[in-house]
Structure formats: C-alpha cells, structure tokens
Length: 276
Ligand SMILES: C[S@@+](CC[C@H](N)C(=O)[O-])C[C@H]1O[C@@H](n2cnc3c(N)ncnc32)[C@H](O)[C@@H]1O
Image (cartoon, protein in one colour):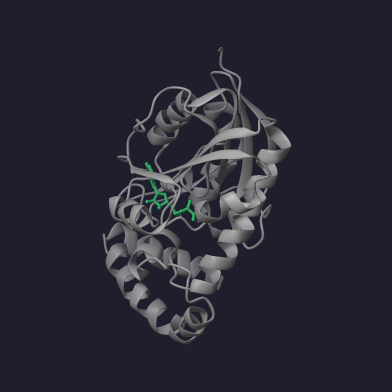
C-alpha cells in the first residue's frame, strides 16, 4: 500500500468515527504556527490589505497563509475575468460569486474586468464570513444563504455566476437542487462557471471509490456537516454532463484540471440557454 493510500485510509477511519472535525481543529492550530513568520512578513509588506480572521480563512481554504490567500486570489480573479470577457459582450454586467468565503477572489474581480459598469455580489452559507466581508470589503453586495437553495435574489439577477470549489463540498441531492437554482438566478444567455474534483483527483480515491467514479457516479465523502471543507465530492465528467447540464444549460467548455495555477480542479463554462 502506498503512503497516499495509507493517509486516505486514516482520514477515512477518522471520518467514520466522526473525529475528522476534531483532527481538523488540531491541524488549524498547526497551520497558525507554521505560517506565523511568513504571515508576519506579509502584513509588514501589505499594511493596507484587510485580512480575514484566521479561523474564517481556514474554514474556507484549509490554510492560514496570507501570501497564498493574496496571490492565488489575484490569479484566480484574473482567470475568471478572462473567461467572462471571452464569453459576455455587454459592458454593464451583474456578476455573482456563490460560495465566496472571505472574498479571496471576489475582492479582486473589479481590477481585471474590462467593463465600464459592473455590479458585484457575493453569497456564502457561512454567515460569519459574510459578516466579515460586509464590514471590510467595499463596493460589493454580500449576503448569506442557507446550505439549501434558494439564494435571496430574484429570477434573472446575474449575467454571470461563478463558484470555485463549492460543488466539491455538497451531496448529490444538493448538486441537482443548486444547479437548478443557479439556472434560475442567471439571465437567459448568461454564464455559469464552476469547478469540480475531476480526473486529476483520482489518485486520492480508495479502491471502492475509484470503481464508483469510473462508473460515472458522483463519489461523496460525508459523515461531517455538508458544505464544510471536509465534506468532499469527486465528479466524473460524465456525471456533470448527464446530471447537471440539463434544462437549457449548454457547455461552452470543460477545462480539465489543472486549468488554473495551483488549483487542479476542472473548470466548466456553461451558457444558460433558458427561454427569455
Ligand atoms: C472551499 S471554500 C471556497 C471559497 C471560495 N470559493 C474561494 O475559492 O476562495 C467553499 C466555500 O463554499 C461555501 N459553501 C459551501 N456550501 C455552500 C452553499 N450551499 N451555499 C453557499 N456557500 C456554500 C463554504 O462556506 C466556503 O466558503
């Protein structure tokens, strides 16, 4: 058995015993300790950059490293904006990030968008993240939602809704309910961009999980609160195509991971072709 498999089996055991959250709390303390020096330097170099509380960063990202929060946020915002520019012509856009966490990406979007009038919205089910964003990030409308749909907004509110690593923490039922909800809030002709744990992550799967994945089924590791980082789903592309891309959702592109720097998830760019 290789060491990767040993680690996955150990985590599997913790999950089954409902001890994974406890182990993750210990890992959080280690992360604080291990990033202390680097973070101290970052704060000295970027005195005007508002940082979220460490526990909120860890809840969303599984680390508390400020240089990574800052640089990956810029790189991923730039990437999302390139996809928006390539696929939406209008100069006046309403853009939403669902599952924005402490705004790692959303806070940088305006700097990369070649559009004159952009409204930005961020949603997350962690109400404490949203409350931090509301108090610390200007010119973006932040609101919390529950783990289940709906989002607190009207039909056809957005030209583009993107989410990075949110479906990766939901059950199959929630995939079906949320994709329908995203289709509701995005305008006809609008864009939905999302990411998944695709083939790149097969190395992580235990034998039974791999068999399930190869058969085209979603693989879900639960026994922990849904929507949290340790609740994990793996997505065979066949599952996305057959179960999620329905009701007028048309694939523009599927970019297998690693499509983004330091982020090996698959990226899906979808057009909402529902009737006007
Ligand atoms: C892995 S983090 C990614 C955060 C952010 N997308 C980023 O890449 O910086 C997943 C985020 O999705 C949020 N989340 C999970 N389930 C959600 C749901 N049903 N509705 C809204 N947000 C959700 C979590 O609270 C967390 O902030």
